[in-house]
Image 1 (cartoon, helix red, strand yellow):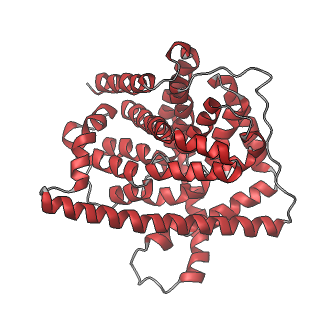
Image 2 (cartoon, one colour):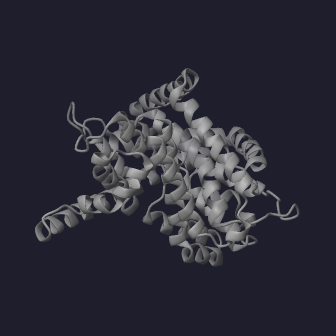
Image 3 (spheres, rainbow, N blue to C red):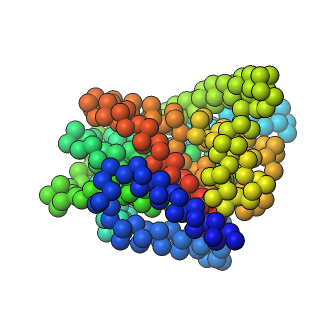
Amino acid sequence: MKYIIGIIGLIVVLGLAWVGSSDKKNVKYKPIITMLILQFILGFILLNTGAGNYLVGGIAKGFEELLKCAGEGVNFAFGGLVNDNQFSFFISVLLPIVFISALIGILQYLKILPFVVKYIGLVLSKVNGMGKLESYNAVASAILGQSEVFISVKKQLGLLPKHRLYTLCASAMSTVSMSIVGSYMVLLQPRYVVTAIVLNLFGGFIISSVINPYTVTEEDDILVVQEEKKQTFFEVLGEYIMDGFKVAVIVGAMLVGFVAIIAMINTLFKTVFGVDFQDMIGYVFSPFAFLMGVTLNESIQAASVMATKLVSNEFVAMNLLSSGSVHLSARSTAIVSTFLVSFANFSSIGILSGAVKGLHEEQGNVVARFGLKLLYGATLVSVLTATIVGLIM
């Protein structure tokens, strides 16, 4: 039965993407089918094989060691602020972002990351039927983050037509930056985080290929990556450390605002309607959770977590899922967890348009205009990933 529901879910996701397509007649089905098959193969390997478990276990252990190292720095600066056996979200989950960001800066300075990103992007461009720029951007987004990635393609921003700009932004919203992956692994099982990152990479291309189909000519398919200005090692290190701290503070501030607003709305809804706001949106989104593979009796709770991510951000939803107040089976937890690993939420529209506008004002306005369509596509990417995980588990 789960396979029938899952296949219906896949059809619904792709159908919703097709409904929102800007050029239904020119959708390229061959690369879409190829990437769907790749998603199933990679998802199965990562979740259901010994080799996949070994790989994910190695990645998780690596991040665990990195987080221990980060903890040394955090405890030195902020030790004593939290009582023994007490948990601080900001100190334990967000501040390690500073250390991971510093490591990314070191790998950037050594030219290791640019090399990896460029050549993985070139390989992807052979599979997805899109341009080298789109493929590079998708991989770079997963390393640098949804705002910072546009700096590396600054030279081409002003030359991009609307449809190519949409794909770049959709990739940035569908992936997550490496600097916060460790923080996700504190709240979710690492294997779900790794699986979602891989599947979202292809899912972003699949949904964009349906919603926003186009062909890139060879003369337009030129990848020009902005060279970083020459800096010393310690200048780069200091810059990335400060960038990591800014991210931690910004996410922390957003959590304060969103959690407080949701608490206020829950109180109002409880007073007026006798039901929490999160329970209400859970009822609205529960059919989608069911089609992703969540059992009917768990669909309302699962949908409530998913919708919380959409209206606030992924950290609020992950904290809700890991808090113990939501009780789901292992399979439903896997589906919900992989859905949460992306930047697909309303606040990302402002973040993306602001990032692009800072580099090219006119293109930033273009991003703002198709912001809701961008969120629509990125959310479908998350639904597609979760549905595939539901079929595999």
